[in-house]
Image (cartoon, rainbow, N blue to C red; front, top):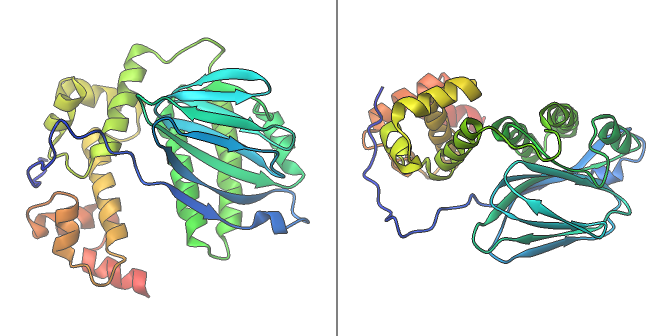
Length: 293
């Protein structure tokens, strides 16, 4: 099904947009009697040439590079950071991250506390000080995005949900870690690059043909890559990103549905409402009322 979207308003000279940083905090450090708790987590974009230093924190951290390049200095050693790099730290493991000025680095992180934190990291081969590369970025990104979503809600179940997601994340990472020196296949690397491009530019992309063209491949090959490496097709993925963004915008009671449609590039509000209902099972105005309740 073709997308009916607004014409692209940005020029090729505009640098690629990096998603806004998003952090959450749950105060897990104040729960000394639980075996495992989430202190916080999030997604951060590091500006060009930016250096981040994390000292001797009292908690354990798991970090994942989803885009860009840079360098990690830990334990007196310097490691190259690329999309797909995962690394861990804990008490006694200070490190610093420097962004490659030519390719802005974006990373996810989750901070853990409790006596089970170092044990589960070790059991999954991710003990503090570990630096590794994973074979599938999208699976890891999806888990981190769910962590951010559930952690940001700050409900009574937030910490329980985040703990479960963190344990699942570590098991998934252990399954996806590649042997030292090994890299994803060319096809997997192309898929990851295209998926990341769509995730970065989804608001202005009008069609799969446009997305494939800007990624430097044809539409048929883009569809084959998604069939091979993902659980949903590229059209569904693009539409889900648009509708999820629109759903967040609709939390603002002053925003009109047609304005939310324009924000994700839809010219026709009726087409937007139809696409929204197909994904969420309800019309945008009904969705907004349910969220308000």
